[in-house]
Structure formats: structure tokens, C-alpha cells
Image (cartoon, rainbow, N blue to C red; front, side, top):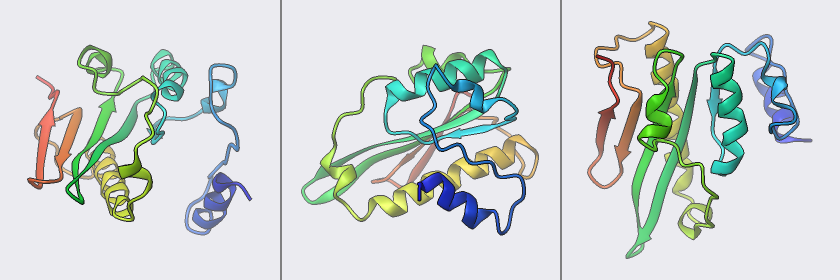
Length: 164
């Protein structure tokens, strides 16, 4: 069973209208995104994000991309988590400030071989959902930041690319 089908089955028990698409989205099939009104992007390969983001921008669909930069130093993980929002009203920061890496992902032993990555992925997902909920009015959003960094070693959240 493909991962997308498994999760559709699991989440389908509590949510309606989940439509799995068991394909890797690229420039040839980006139309599978037709009908979306918001997209979360969580892909390791920066190059794979390009056709998805291009399609979303061309079709006025807002999205959140998450990423992390992790390194192992003296047997400890350090680095950052990133949540980047792009809306029809504010998109320039994605490329102008290089918020999202579009290059080839390098093989990173710190990411692939540490059990601690699971909680960092979970935290990144929670930060992305909270940003989505702020965008749609579930939470107050005084800064309207479009890029958030969580610094692991200092336990700091840094908000950037604010409206206004």
C-alpha cells in the first residue's frame, strides 16, 4: 500500500473529502492540484518543489513549505526548522530572499540516521498548521509573518517577511 493511500484511509475516518493522488507531482501532471485551495509542501528535494510551486503561483493557490537544516556536532543535533507561507498577496520572499531551497538535496546522515528527527518533523508540522490557522483567522496574527525559523539550540522562534 502506498503511503498516500494509507494516510487517506486513516484520516478518512475523521475527515471527509480526502482524495489521495499516488503520483509524484511534476510539470507533466501538476493539474492533479486542480481544485486545491491551499497546499502544504513537505518534500526533501528542492528541485521537485519547482513545478509544484510554479503551478501554485500561476493558479493563485496559497501554500506553506516546510524545511529543516540539521547537522550533527559532537553527537548533538543543531540547526533550524523553517515554515514559509506564500500567498497571492506576498510571494516575492520565496525566491528573492531564498527562503525555499530549490537545489538538489544533499544526503545528510544527521537527518536520515537520528531518531530525534521524528520530533523535529512533528514540531515543524505543528508550526505549519498553526501558521495556516493564523492565516484563516483561528488564531490572532499580529505580525503576519511569512517565514518562521525555529532555532534548535536556543529554542528561539524568529519571524521574518512580515506584512506592512
